[in-house]
Length: 450
Image 1 (cartoon, helix red, strand yellow):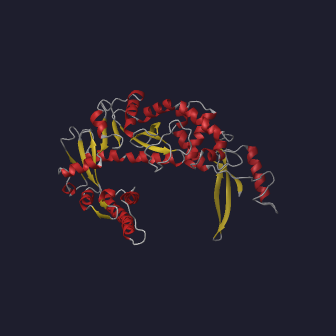
Image 2: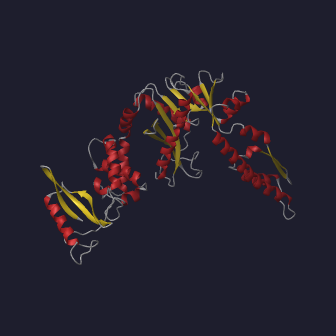
Image 3: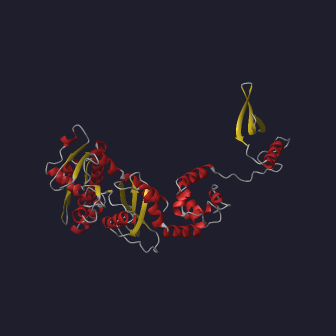
């Protein structure tokens, strides 16, 4: 490597760091960096270091004359994340002026993008002795410990209303789509005032949990979040979120998109005042879809030429029902059902053989029933078996009628909405409902290292 000065036609000369190599008998030059803006004294020291590295007996990896490589600090990804964050002005959304709490919060956001981890591990990534990148040094928070990170989160909580209002002003307008969904997060400790036992999405029935409601734009950009007691039902969170959109964000008309577990039949039937002036998009539950099929409103002929069709039903006045069929989903559900049925059958056969064995056979209607209950618990196909239990015998068979009735609806789902056709076509309504998947993606990110 060497430093060279290139004339620039009357302007200030360009100073370049170059490397010379020889390929196929020819000399090749490659520019490594532009040093034109370097101060003169810094450039001179660098030239001396290069000269020393070429001196006999010198070592590029060890101490040179005025140049010592002690440690490398990865910086490119830090610069990219912080550059994007500042371009989006997220730091100014939190506070207009820089402060230790703001910079720590920015560091936590950037660290979550770069390498998601616990608060303790994130803090260690800032420290000089254990750093993984230049994030702490760049933001001036190298000395921040895990307590500082938690304190910064308290600081951020105090500014939540202001931040949410700023995000809503930036991303939400009258008539826009608003996506809302909930999830639960379980706790290992016992010191959260909101933690309760409730329906766990994580399969942790024995753990305390909280419920989180997240409100997003149609693109999936989070705008507002709220934490509820862990035993709060999803539908009961809806009114406070709609009130937030109306009163805090000042929006009088939006299209509310929520899953059927949040925006329920009861909410739509009894809570008209809650949704007043708001259009909405949700879906029907499986029993309601089965009812439509039994009354002949859903037939496979609807999907001869397309995978969706719009129907009307007097049970749902002033609503549009859009029936959709996903062939791939239908095939997958059929495959999974057969696997679950076969696995449950194997468990039941074991119990039946236990009642027939000659040595200490299983006896007692209660004992047999307990084992059958455990075998079918969580299988999702218990309803597809007809069982008979006595004190000495146990028998079972598949309920083929129920299995056929369920199979007839494989891959079929029904979207319901109050949005007029002139505002959103059937395809656009379905697409809007499917946008809830971006909220699920946000939940996966949130729960990765909460």
